[in-house]
Length: 117
Image: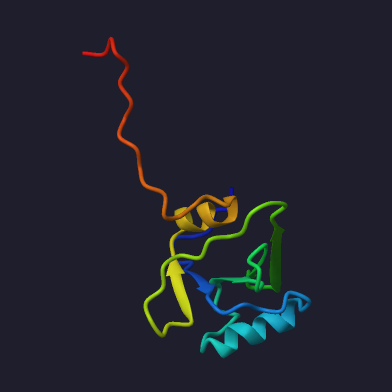
């Protein structure tokens, strides 16, 4: 489980990114979004097939890079307003994204057995 300070915002880039790049390439992607990669926020990017993601974070002394590849399935993108190139998510949604949880899943009502009153 990843945990960050309360002032850390999490930005998800919507457009696919070439995942062959590393720190500098992803920092360039952040700048193309009109943001500063050294401001201490998290930036999450996906490849075209959405089986690979990379997250860039600046901790004050240097860049940190987190990468995850799914063996099955794809990462699901959060809903995005029309014309936007990024979306801000909270830490719970980030955890769901990285776990591969289906974001559009409906909650089921609590199951009660036959003997429940």
